[in-house]
Length: 175
Image 1 (cartoon, rainbow, N blue to C red):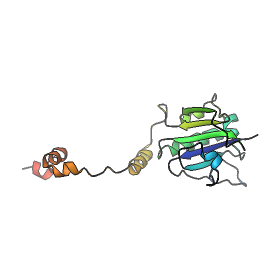
Image 2 (image 1 turned 60 degrees about the vertical axis):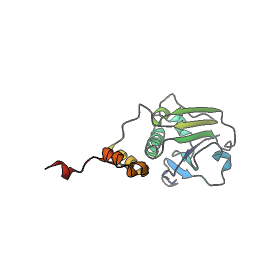
Image 3 (image 1 turned 120 degrees about the vertical axis):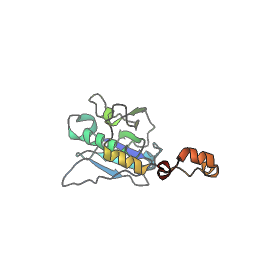
């Protein structure tokens, strides 16, 4: 039986369509009716991830190949916008089984030669200490997707709090 790998996040992740003429790593949105696998996730955006083989088996057996590196890079990029990506691995057709194993790793951790996805495994993927530093473009994306702080009414009503936090305008400093 083939391995199936499902991903979930708190917001939408990029889709990579399957192309039968040019098989490659792909990520497909899971239909809303797939309740058997959705029960494993907190995130409401759920996807199926697979290699050029059409299934997820290559993520376990081809650590020297592009498959696991493509998954690692996909997860690293997804973690620019979300704090974590949940992963559930199981045999095709066994999506409704209970979680057998649970652990937390990083995108780099799943690409290590001694790592393999296990049947019934729930994995939480977060950026680890060993993750590469974010590029300037990634930092920019993080800044623009960060929530805007709410207006502080207390500081606005109390002129001493407001003045202390803001300071005098530059034109008043030069006499």
